[in-house]
Amino acid sequence: MIGFIGYGNMGSMLVKKFIGERILKPEEIIVSTRTKSKLLGLKEVYPKINIAENNKDLAKKAKYIFICVKQPEVKGVLDEIKEFFEKY
Image (cartoon, rainbow, N blue to C red; front, side):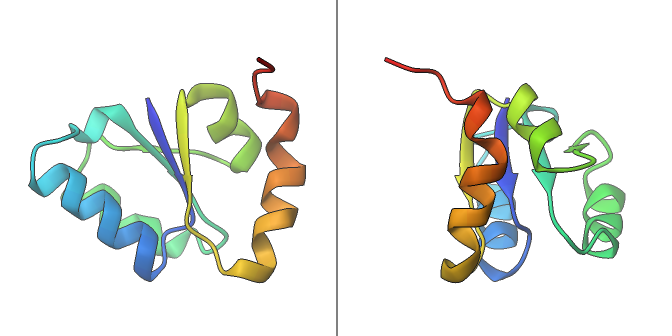
């Protein structure tokens, strides 16, 4: 599963493009965002898309993660999900 943290301008564009170009199926995507109301319309258009309760929930389930938040928020997001990173 591919995760998208943030569903603003960048996150929404990526999700829609991946689905529209048939690179990913909606059921292969999981999305989280601070503003849950943004995801209501997404779920209506793509009923099979997965919505995470929070970023940690997303990080547990996603193999790859796109972080689509504003630059000042990136460190906070990474700190929040760092326990789910694999160490190589």
